[in-house]
Image 1: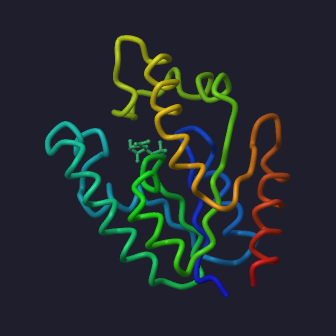
Image 2: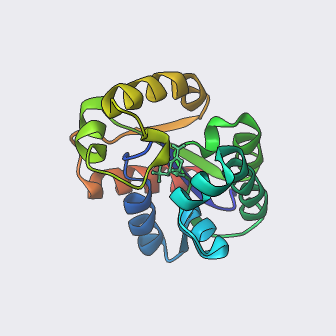
Length: 170
Ligand code: S3P
């Protein structure tokens, strides 16, 4: 039986929303990796990127993946870039159910256009940046076994599909 459920996918796909509700339904605890990194560091993701650089943040992420992969009965929402690192995916895939949330790029843009707290989207042309990053990451997301399309679907339906994957894998 897998240890934890790991919810991943691009920024704005609803990882934290879906993960939190799924955890409630299953009676598991919920962990948002970005929030845990911010708590432990005592600063925001944007501050970490600006003061230490992206590679420092990626190292924090990788260390946290190794730590969390050994926990039990958590629903874990990753950051959007976490599992595009094949080593992080391998760490979770060994004993956890990993689910990738997919979403139409235009809907992602609607959700992310006003967001100020995502340093990976910093650009004069934020939409072009989003589309380029999504395209660049697509091959990495494609390596994840389970996907749920969230486009035009309500939260309940998405949570139910994730739950079915979990029940099926037990
Ligand atoms: C990132 C996504 C963010 C956060 C950081 C980097 C990325 O998480 O981890 O800003 O590289 O896609 P969300 O997907 O929760 O926004």
